[in-house]
Length: 186
Image (cartoon, rainbow, N blue to C red; front, side, top):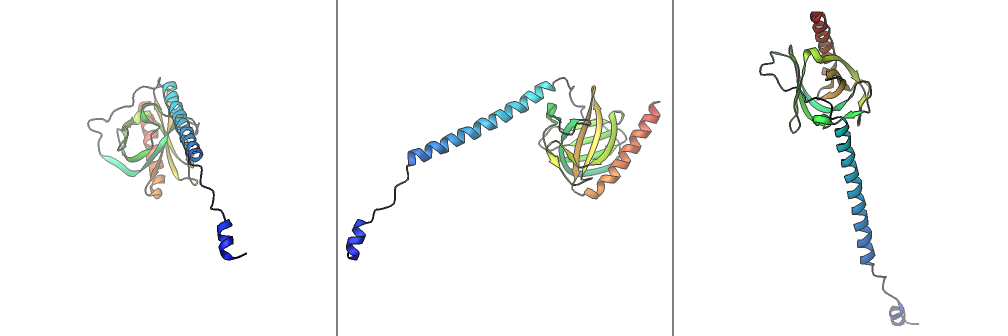
């Protein structure tokens, strides 16, 4: 057999079945869209279950002088003591950048692109360092968690500073302010 005869006998590679491949791609895209839609419905359902929460307090006209300020991330809010029970009502489930300011009046949380809120000093219940909140787990002490009362619900809100070394000062100042506020209320 000569080289020419061998070349004639060889077959070309099979052509891809484009219709079947496009069908699989379309099916996969539909599946991803369905999963996304179901996740969105779950988020809305959780928000409707939490519709009994009152509106968030607005920013006061004058909040006094700043004791502490911090820039960082807001990682979300949960029911106090239930670090996986995320609260999504009134935008509290939306992660965002955050600027925190602690004054004598309370805690201001300014969130570009999300709902800002204010926690009056009399509603603050505690602050601690923790390692996680719904959807975010960090190293031990990597998260500043502020507990506050909103309506009849105790809420834990998680923040992480751009400079984590600031967290202990925030815990000390918040807890001192809470103890002073509680003492003055009696």
